[in-house]
Image (tube, rainbow, N blue to C red; front, side, top):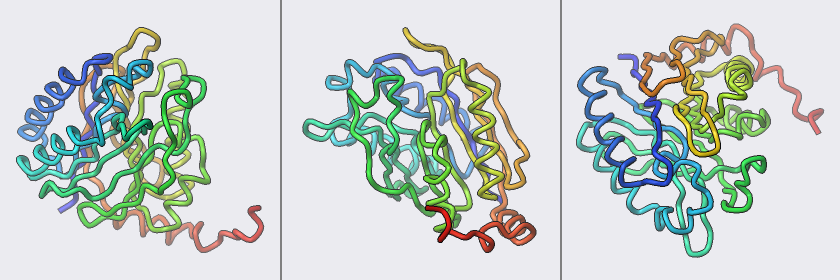
Length: 262
């Protein structure tokens, strides 16, 4: 059976983790009943929003609350969860960290955002990660990246050359650059011949209006599901065999000449 993926496009309450945990719990319960997805995806910084100046107060210590929360949800509903990302505080450093849990509530991997977005002052408040976002879930080779990461095709290719067939992108992407969001996601799908599952946030905060338009794109670059700008969700079934088919028809990975790419 082809796995169904659901992206939950939240209107995140600025700087209010308690509200946002409750909101996610309610949304997941509702979506499980309606869509029966295999994988649920949340957006970037869904516990706090971009309340960067207060992260020292409201970030999740060692990610413990978030890990426990997502683990219990995954186990309760027997669903895999790509847990967006949260502000994780470890001693004097805060990272923008994605947690992935399987349907048994076991932590599969975590990835901390590599490319910090200086235009939104992330580098003043966050520490960049250093590891790749590779993981396996629902018997599919996957990778997870966060927002600004999609502007670095070499970073995405570092994952797809290692077998990733589905790229999960979680974001707080602004409405002002919606055209960039859609174009970059389509490009990453086409050039890497993979599914792109992109979960953005909706709504606004004191400084930004966000684009929504979460998308699921197949390896040919066809959009198979797309949200509008409002809070809600999108779902689509994916077929990992399609990745192999597309890669065999146009053998981009076989024809690479990395010795010239310096």
